[in-house]
Each structure stands twice: as structure tokens, then as C-alpha cells.
Amino acid sequence: MAMAVVDSMVFLFLLPVALFFNPAASQSTGYTNHTVGGSAGWFFNIKTQKASADYSAWAAKQTFNLGDTLVFNTNTNQTVIQTYNATTYKNCTADYASDDDTFQYQGGSNEFGKAMTITVSLTLEGQQYYFSDADDGSQCLNGMAFGIKVGHGIGLPPSLNQPPPPPYVEPPSTVEDAESPPITVVTSSPNGCVRSSAGLFFAVSVLVMLALHLV
Image (cartoon, rainbow, N blue to C red; front, side, top):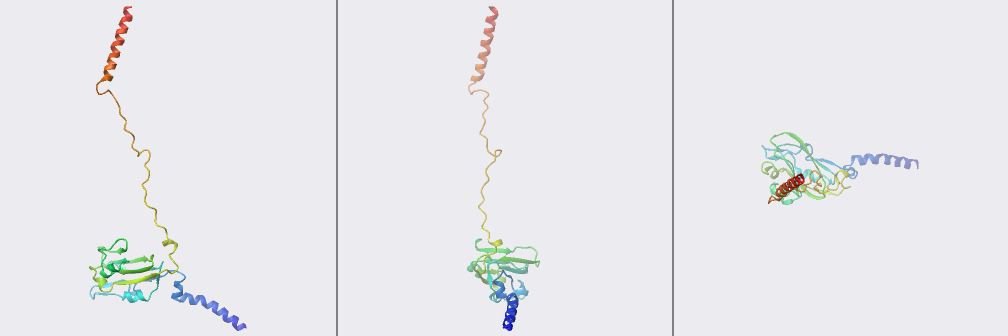
């Protein structure tokens, strides 16, 4: 009986350790950062026209879920294209791709060979593809490409599961910005009636004063 209690205690002690060192179990309790290509990184050898790793084989050994992150350790000689369009992936170019399903994370840099790290969060379930379209797509055609299937896992973390921002609404105009109605200043009527009336009033006043003086 005492041995059974000890064995149970040992099992309870070793269970967290086993879960910690078991990659499959750890994926069910959190999110994973996948370093693309492992230690080989995301590189292409121009001289040999070969990728630094078999990225399709690397991806086949991984389990990808929502909230995970792809980490591309690379330099400016390569690009990172993410697409949900299989045709774009097969064509190895993003030139004619839609902005709704294809995204470029790096490209067009004038600094060759500058080290950089690109991270891509996995926010949609299903099939998606990655490739480098540098050198007019030749890198992609020579191995710089792979596809993955993203599962649901434990779902997106709150930081990635935010509702889209509301549409932009033009702010109302302030009193200063509002257009004032036009103000018309009349100095005289078009036919000069204002001035004529004033002159007639002056003449009548003079005649009245003269009449009073004579009386």
C-alpha cells in the first residue's frame, strides 16, 4: 500500500516534467515560434542556385496552429511572400496577386546582404504558402518555398483576436469651418433711387426753413 502511494507521488512529480519536454504536449498549452529552416535559416546560395534547407521537408515535421509565429532568420537578398492563393504560389511571383490574399513582408531593399528577422503571425486556419520571389522568382523555383496547414489549436490569443477598427467617418464641421451665408451690402439701388430720395429730402428741408424765416 505504501509503495502504491510512493508510485503515485512519483508519477505526479514526473508528469509536469514529461509535459514540459514533450513538444506535442506543449503545443496544446500555448503557442509556438517556428524558426523556418531551423538553424539553416531562410537563405539562398546564388552560386549553387540552391536553398539552404529543404523547407517543404522542414514544414512537414511541424504542427502549426492559430497564434503560432513563423520566424524567418534571413537577409535582404531574400524576400518573404505569404499567400493563400495556390496559383500565386505555383507561379512563384506576387506581381499579379491580389492584395486580399497575398502579402509581401520584405522586398525592394537596396542594401544587399543586410541581416534581418521577419516574424509572421498565423491568424487564419487552413492552407497557406510562403516563398521568396527574389531574382525574378528563380529562388522560389529552386526551393525557397513551402506550404503549411494551420489548425485551430487553442485559438488566437487576445492580442491577435481584436475586432477590425470601425470605418472612418468624416468629423463634423466646426462653427469656424462652416460657411457663413453671404452678406449683401447695399450702397444704392441699381437705378439710384436711394441717392435721389436723399437729395429730394434735403431740398424740401431748405424750402421749409426759408418759409419759416419769411413768416
